[in-house]
Image 1: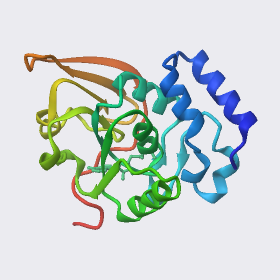
Image 2: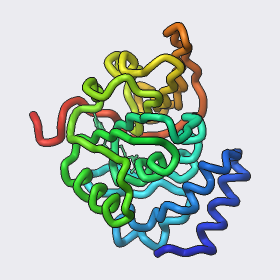
Image 3: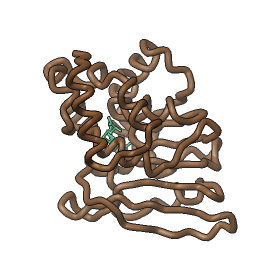
Length: 214
Ligand code: SAH
């Protein structure tokens, strides 16, 4: 349930872990995480841990959500592409901090549940679709920011093509779950791309195709 004391404890822990962007911290404070987690885990919604959601997927750990969001360096002018809607929690955080979020998920049931929460929370700047995130959303490109919340072996080429100049893409990469890290990819004003390996992480894999396809 929404538990203010637990929430404050979580915010304090995130600050100690190095989350200093006050817009990011206030988004974490305002978006209720409990509505995005399954019933059986609601009492643990404000612990700093990843939790299981439907279809064998996970809602990311609050620290990782805050860390990746902080790296995106968002403001209200930005158009963001997110791959892996999952529970929709990260999407709702992004929506508070940017102009519009385009979010792609490969499981229809997860996307439907997430959309119900966006509606209940009266969030109106999220556009979603079912699809394979490797392909991005070419009709809406270029994007100022791209966030991927499932681990690919390397940076998906089509996503990189959809990142605009001065753009930032944050994604987990790695061949197996024991060897993953967050990569920050930046494209400068001349289109030049640089990549930096940051935090070690453990994400579910980015899978080819839409769920249910063979
Ligand atoms: N940000 C979500 C994380 C969910 S886990 C949250 O905090 O709730 C990662 C999600 O990526 C899963 O829902 C999974 O189904 C989705 N995913 C994996 N591969 C994908 C792909 N190729 N295209 C779109 N979504 C994908």
